[in-house]
Image (cartoon, rainbow, N blue to C red; front, side, top):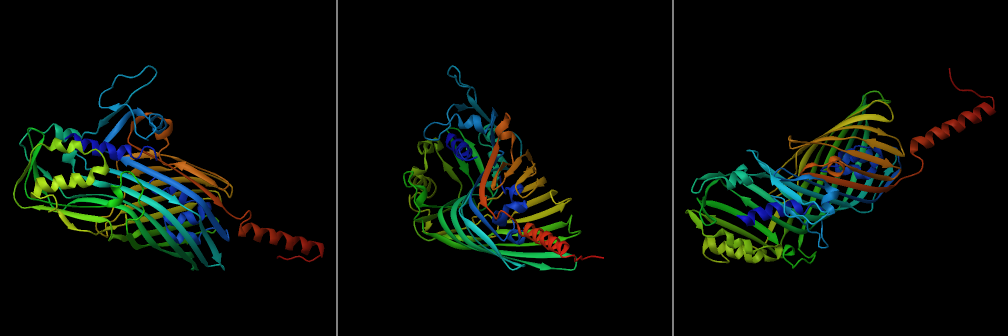
Length: 487
């Protein structure tokens, strides 16, 4: 099934020109300002600046456990891109290399693990937050985001597991969901800081209007039996497949922003600050991306429900479909093979997709005004139907941070099987970093990468700086007039 293999490789290669899941190292810094609300909307109440501006932020994350590239890194892979952004010279075995060039070789993981693959990109445009009084903070933000992937590819579809299986041996295909969604969100943020006996309670909410640009999903609703047959053919038991996509995916490579998708979402968060004021603890919890987008125009939802055993002869015929431009023809062919009619699978001209909802826990301990360690944990949640997957992520974040300089060395675990070490650097209003440093400077089994950068504008002096300056001036005036305060 070369077509299936190409699809798997294609999903991975699409991410290479983009190259952190939650960018926790950045968002746990107090100097990150309004950018922090992507992790917890209550974080806007943190900080000593009266206002904060994000000029631009760009980030992307890619990880998978289906295949890997051997002995390479992100920079080397980018050097193998052609003018069309396609990766050159990759194969399961080393192809003949041109003089002075080394081939890029990939291979597939073995084992019985459920497979995942994910791409996440985020572009945050000009956004601002400002404090009103001592307790209230209001912000306005906009983000363009993309989420592609699946967290539950059946282990029986692992490359070697599938191709080493004998003909006419049945195996189970469990329910799974793969989805892709691209959307714009424009939102408001409100947070409030409430004093308590032990510290401070901060509450935050970020309602947002959503504009969907493209969406697609494929879902297996029930477990069914599948057999490989000679001649690149398949035989399955009763199946119930559902999939949908927008026409913006099939417009001959042109960008189409007229997909007709819209909806609403919200982020909710709480943070509790307690302990000694000079070295406090903080614990936060948030629900992120609770909402959905409905595509009511230029969309199609298909359903393939077959109660009788089904045989597809010559599955290699699908190898002729090599791009998204051929998606409509591929669907018509598949509908003909399964239901006997090229249009019988069409169920409706609309569908909805949930946002990649997640619950997030944040814990931070400040040792001094500049040294701290933090922990974040993000767990995916499927609240609305057809939502793109989000990878489970745990990060430990030792950090040094001042107003104009900061360093964080995050250690992250993806889906409890991939451990990565990163680095974050703050130089005044510029933030840049990665949660996978070795994907840029090392060489090994390359299966994930990420990078992010943000440019901000903040006051030259914080509120605490002004307060301290005013206190010094008062003391000076008091000494000049011979008046002293104290005991």
